[in-house]
Image 1 (cartoon, helix red, strand yellow):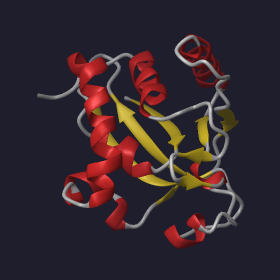
Image 2: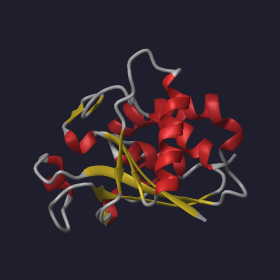
Image 3: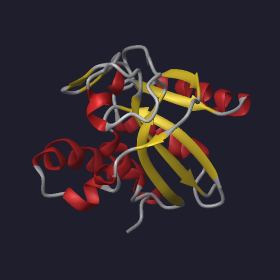
Image 4: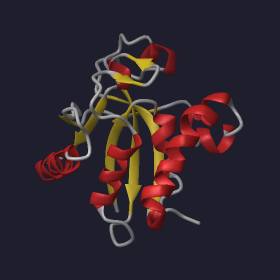
Length: 174
């Protein structure tokens, strides 16, 4: 098993797609990259903790290559906007990849280079050494699966799921 720590704006969006991805065994929403110990959702949303909303994605590389997990990451958010994803603005919504060792850092940098050709503007995703990951409150885990009827899910997450189905259907559970 391999685990990546990725931030692409709202963690609900990444969680929704990775939960439906073949070979993914766990997705945990949480906070990382900041200075406040054991932050809560509203603290992180305030933009004062330095943390980003992130997901810890654990997957089986014998079922799905790491490169596919990373390419999906770049397809599921706009990695060219600094500290912003759609209506969500602030460092807590930054695009970031948190590496645990140099091999992972190189894998992340290669993914940026590979995906840059898909974007007109430069990718601003930061590649940063992982710090402590704080699991988000229970309400944020499996958010889409438990709240798919809510407006945010309908307007923001459903189009991302449609995009994942369009480009990554071979990697999604049926």
